[in-house]
Each structure stands twice: as structure tokens, then as C-alpha cells.
Length: 197
Image (cartoon, rainbow, N blue to C red):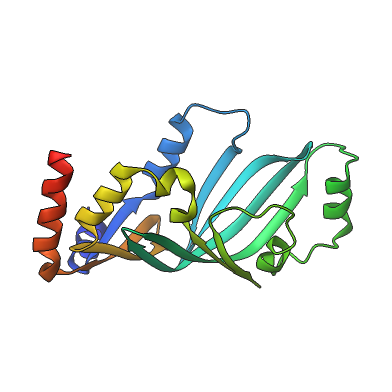
């Protein structure tokens, strides 16, 4: 509680990673979703591991992820991510091309952005990929972009308060906030439209 209060004084929201782990553990499993997800603080980054299926090959993957920058607006949900310490291990005795590629060590995992460039079908949300930096804009996803509730919530909140960065400190996920009191009238109008519509 003291850590959460200390961060709150600095306009930061501290979320215990234990809560995030609990949420992951209690989420109903899906056949296509990653399995055995682990979340560990590696300040200022967060280390995430999971078992995934890649073209018939079971892989244990892990990486450190650091959120370099966040830009949130009604028309934009842009996130700049630095990915490091990537590790891929083939589980079992798979004899697939993917397994052979990983075991050969031919992949330069220190520059994941360059690997993403060569994907035959890139995600809609991908803006930029270079070396260890990946830039995403979630509003490029049609389901998010066309969701009126998401848009109206952003129109209500972003004029007043915004998330500018995410990091870790101890076993906490830290959300750095920025308050803009002058945006209250605009947020009030957006909230009134959300309530009436």
C-alpha cells in the first residue's frame, strides 16, 4: 500500500503484477491462445513467457518488453515497444521447417523488428518495425476503430488524463499518467454525449 501511495503522489498508478498473474490464470483457456504464460518484472521492462504453436511447432518463447512511448487519442492508440532478450526453444522432437530454423540459430533474435518486416502478412496494427523497436497503432484494427464505445470513452478520458508510459518497479506494473485540467470542459461534453447516445 505504501508503494502504491508513493507512486500515486507522482501521478503513477501501481498495479501489482500478482493481480495480472491472477487475471491470466483465471482467464478461460483457448486452443489458439498462448499457454503457460509467465509475467516477471525486469525493471524497467516486463519479461513475458508463453508456450505457443507456430505452424505445427510447439515453442517456448520469452522476451523482455519495454514500453518506450504511448500516444492515446480518440483517433490513435499508438505504442512504441522495445523488445529484447528474446529466447525461443522448440519443445518436443518437431521436424518442421520452423523447428529447423530455430535450432539452426540462423534467426537474429536481437533485431525482431527486422524479422517482422519479412512476414508475408503483416498485422494491421503494425506501423513501424526496425531493429529492436516495434511501433503499433491499435486503432488500425477495424474492430477497435469501428467500436463506438471505445471511441467515446477515449473522447471522454483523453482530454483530462492520459497514459504516457508503462514500466515496472519491484513487482509492480507502473502506469505513468498525465493530467490536463484544461480539458475538463471537452471531457464533460464527451461524457454527456456518451450518456445520451
